[in-house]
Length: 154
Image 1 (cartoon, one colour):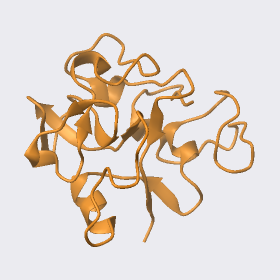
Image 2: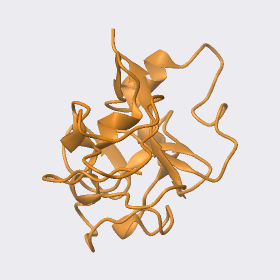
Image 3: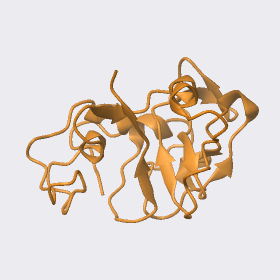
Image 4: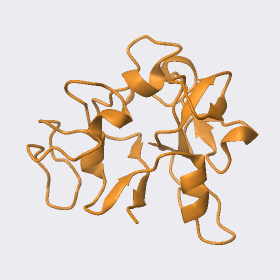
């Protein structure tokens, strides 16, 4: 579970909050002071975009190869809308998983998106009623349904 306290969205948690109560394995046991970055282990960060995920995937693997559950794992991929991944914008969330709307080819290897107002990724996610600002407005106030996709810091 994560919720960015001052600024919603995966980007708000660029550094783990030391006040987050965890079980010691980067799995928060409560939402107290947790940010999205608390879900990534030390020396790891929320994957920035499709290009970073593609560079980190083992040869021959796809985004969904290791995710066989109905969960959504968000990245910080940008979009200006229409499900198209790009270098700017806050429209939709993109990631990997078995939960979500199929992502467009521009997002490969990311295979799923949140859809409008996070409607395609279930009730564990909330985008605050926005159809165009999901990436910056998302909170995840419930357990289950996934989390963030973490990449090793180089």
